[in-house]
Length: 290
Ligand SMILES: Cc1cc2nc3c(=O)[nH]c(=O)nc-3n(C[C@H](O)[C@H](O)[C@H](O)COP(=O)(O)O)c2cc1C
Image (cartoon, rainbow, N blue to C red; front, top):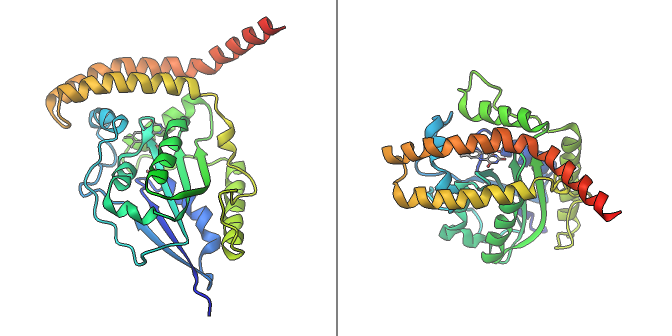
């Protein structure tokens, strides 16, 4: 009898949103005799709090943008080698979330070496840097990216910002904890799950791609400019805060409150205005081109 195809699913998920997305992709593979699935959660030794205390939440942004790892529980894998590794994570302060960074910097990330990988990224809107970093980490570990999934929050800026805020700061009883995946994205995820099953069963996992359609969210690069500007600011301000204060210290909280003043102007005034500014800029550009 032929060996089943071995799939390892590695992920972090605090409010189960990323896990839900992973499940849509993985569900068609479950209970198949010719496929074995192993799911491993990346677990920080000291779990991040949920709901997040507000100032503490913002105080960790320097560690996020500078990719400072935390100690994670050593992941245990049943196999030495897999046919496919699916890695699921999220964006924290426009950067790859700390638990994912911590895994990629852990010695057990060697499991990726010489293995095909699919990434699943879940976030509100700005994903370009994080997707790139995830791919760089995979390449550094010797893995080969065969395809990628991206899910972003449905809705307008303010709507998704409020949903994210409620999602992270309200206790479980006060909020639904999940943001909506659009019906189109949902349909696409289910199709991608079927495509993956087909690719595994017919030995068609290759760098050419696995999914018949790319995640629609990849088409939206409207926010690449604000993301670049915001990351630059995060790196500048985060660098100073990180140099001057230790995480969880009173001085860090004090500096965080000062930073928040500028952060809220950027997020709640600058970002919602950006689509309008972009439209005006594009209009002006096409006007001058004529
Ligand atoms: C510390 C922290 C920072 C975050 N920063 C961002 C961000 O910069 N951009 C974004 O789209 N979402 C951000 N989020 C929201 C996460 O992307 C969201 O919580 C995640 O998608 C939820 O996935 P999970 O339930 O699988 O943990 C942040 C969340 C946390 C906890």
